[in-house]
View 1 (cartoon, rainbow, N blue to C red):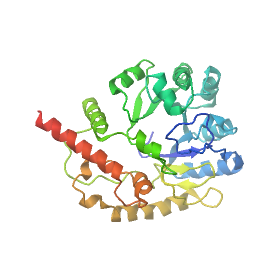
View 2 (view 1 turned 90 degrees about the horizontal axis):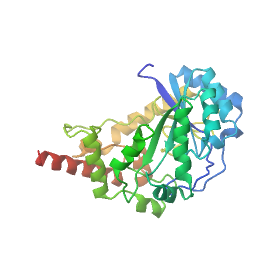
View 3 (view 1 turned 60 degrees about the vertical axis):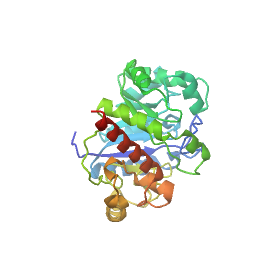
View 4 (view 1 turned 180 degrees about the horizontal axis):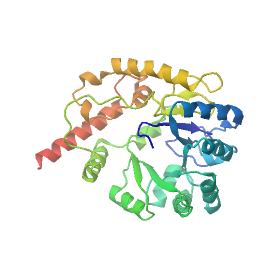
Length: 327
């Protein structure tokens, strides 16, 4: 596959059968892409192909609750998209796993927040969800698809060694997200779930040991993320285009705007962000993982400095200093 290929995420629905404390749809809405005709979706998929998009991820809410899921998969596979799904796994029994495989789905990501059922079920606010998610991972692999575990990290921080060992029992890769954030109403619970500074350091030490984080960075500005490129096209349940899933700014709709027009507008967005973000003068920018969306959500300014990201960068700096002083 061309290393410069693009990817798109389509949010099929806001419906979900869990009530996760950190969910970006806390109202657990009933909105769905089913309201948009398959003819329009087919036209959009053609435009994505023309724009060099080869990978398509179907997400939600819980995408398995979308009644047109398999119709959309069929349209995507007809155009040779590499189709992936992000799911909580609650509906992914053996029958569903085999249906997805037969439909042409390549991989499924499952959200799992711990190796312990009580912790996971506390986050999802749904008894027995841990068991069903674990079984979903097994069903994915048995059906012949690729699988991953997606783990958002919360306070109190789980034992990362235990979590990685747990993932190996399936076995599947695990992807961590240490920066849980709230997209809508700035609920207090998000602050309560966020990692403390010391928990951030613990996570960073762990990632350094794995070789995922470096300690030899040169003082230089981190590049802008992939927001507003053909790498991160996001289409929500209403057909709205967004530069990424977490950036709540609509830049068109599939009913009225072409993919080419959206990408042109996003080029101007990136130029503006690059010109005005404060990273150029920040003394810890090389430790930072800049995210325009989190900056916007926390400060109201996409070019602003996210307090959460700065705390993470400072924790990263502290760990690097600690390691170098002890070697």
